[in-house]
Length: 126
Image (cartoon, rainbow, N blue to C red; front, side, top):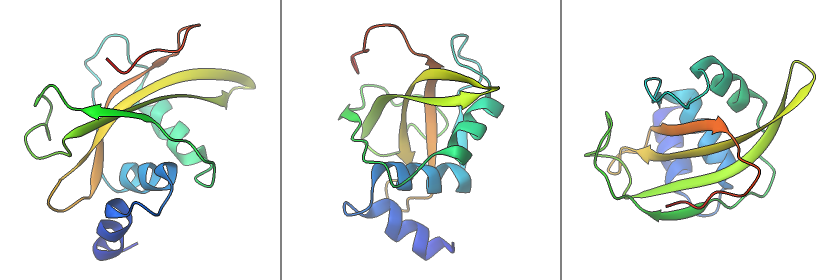
């Protein structure tokens, strides 16, 4: 996918969220590896590669409260958060994912703030 197609896809409200997330992460991924609760970047990359982008998943969204992170100043002004599951070594792993797309003026990637084992209760986005 060329840059113009990627910008169009990431800017589209007509495309599924998971399709946009997968395209952004495969193009340019910024991952908060220093966050102690996060699972490994390699595991997130495996999760992204196995995502079924045709699934309908609407994440919770809210305005970003922080401008931290590599793309904090230039990223989209809202964060997404959702829970999902995928297979790893024959076991189902439930995960919580939180992040934002960047750059707002020229969308090209995603910054993942949280990729953790999901708690038994659904998390709020706050």
